[in-house]
Length: 408
Image (cartoon, rainbow, N blue to C red):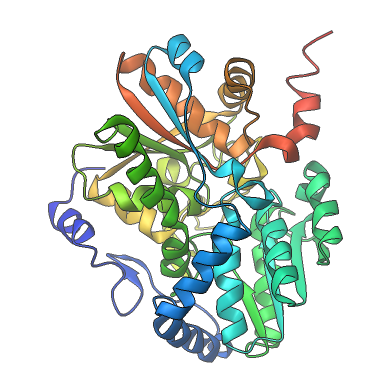
């Protein structure tokens, strides 16, 4: 997309979202009337608590003593030598429960507690948000129900067991596409039935206002830490920052601190799946058109009649036909470039990081690594900072069927 200078200036000035929850033309609130009071109450709660000194101190203490922040910044020396550029990794895989999801889950659970919620509902795709939600609710003594697509439950069986051990009820979703989209639908239906007693702990930077803003603010700790850590290590900013993009929470958390740094190239990597055909990928910003899904106006994968299409990715966490509205604006403004990485090149990136650095990345994170490899080949000697959003233990069933099946 072409550079939109007015939108870019607004982004750099930090003026999004506006009072209506809009990120330029994107975002907003498109929900049943029954949910409006709950969203208004949540918006008021965000305004009252999110940047309150006592809330930030409590959240910061829990992130430090329970969730393991700050996470490390690792220079991948052997991978850098192989790929021809300097590769740095922001290690969200080292956070408690194994991914960046804990930052958002813990923050929202603390907010729900302050709003007097009696129970938490959540959705999950790859299972990491479900595990993080279950862990945060166990920490705070809140009952937790997690909706998960039946297909995702099969390919992410280890995380289903982890959620149940942490005390959550895991509800399989057998309707719709039986992946993340269907899980969000079911969680929303549950919330509609009890919008005041139940808190919906949404896992990505999608959905109706104020969720995209709330999730961004809770995940922005990633980019703030990474920016400071990199400057301390290298004495400068990186040439490029790269993260994978599904709904977009790890990416918006990583990108937010770097948006004003015009000398830093920012790249989001979507799931290219099997190719550019509709239904063969989950690359919303690369192949989608504007529309409304799950309460927000953003870019969607839809056919000529406006019907939302099923998606494909080897990664359950990226297998979603929409994207957060702030990412749609970042693409529209030209500040962030969005590319795709297919299943095979992402699996190859898993093998490379394992064999060169002794780190097993999540399949989601492997898409960012595949993008970093492509960038490195085009920018020999440059420096790129990659958000390693999670670890790959949860993906072992897929690795057994792909990477390990190739070996005797």
